[in-house]
Length: 60
Image (cartoon, rainbow, N blue to C red; front, side, top):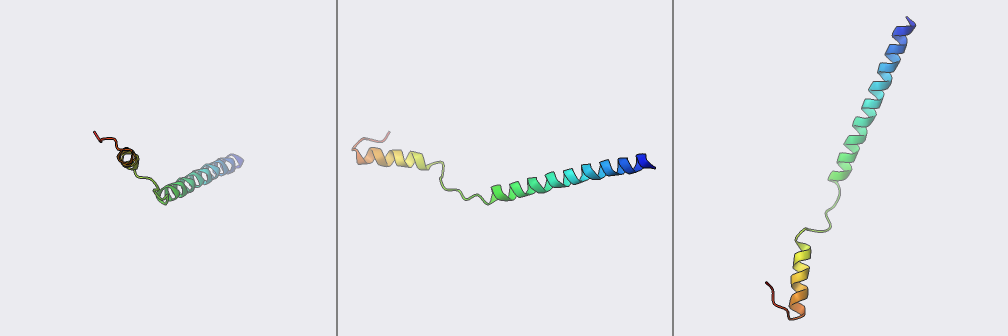
């Protein structure tokens, strides 16, 4: 009987750990989804073009 109890306790611990990991992953997904984009990828190209235009350089 003690073996069954120990096996059950071990299985319960595994299930708790699995549940905890699942919850942590879901929280991480939610946090990632809520990150506000502050820079667009094309911004640096436009900044360079504007800089070159202000200095009188020609755009290629």
